[in-house]
Amino acid sequence: MSLEFSADEPVRHVLVADDEPHIGRIIQMKLERGRYRVSLVSDGRDALERIRGDEPIDFILLDIMMPYVSGLDVLAETRQLPARQQTPVIVLTAKGQDSDRRRALDLGATDFFTKPFSPKKLLARIDEFFA
Ligand SMILES: [Mg+2]
Image (cartoon, rainbow, N blue to C red; front, side, top):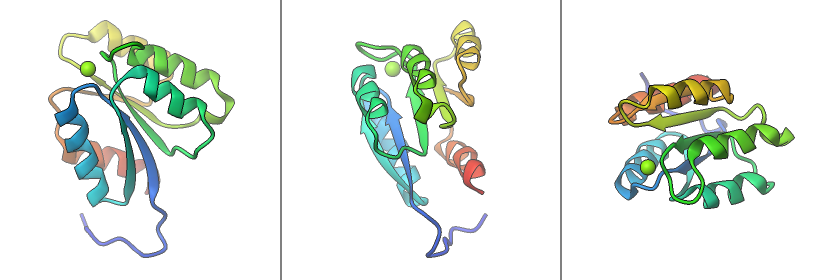
């Protein structure tokens, strides 16, 4: 896969919500080497605040287990917002959360990744949406 980006390809804004700082940072570093700008938040309340706002968000990554508001609850509200109904959402789950994964897909998640996952594969999956 080419690492070259054409100059007229837009920079996409990705909201990443994960309460484990090292995971958030790894995702951010990987995506920002691609053609993405990342906003990183570390709990569900901050994620909802960004999602309820009117800034353009092209893609959302939601950890499930987060303080204040779970990723599933953030996802449910996201899909209630007309401006965010089509926004792709990838849910990040821990091993053994099979029921959470089903619930995420029922709530309108686009896909899920089980931790630990390859940041490279995550980037490739996101790239597919904008190819
Ligand atoms: Mg978590």
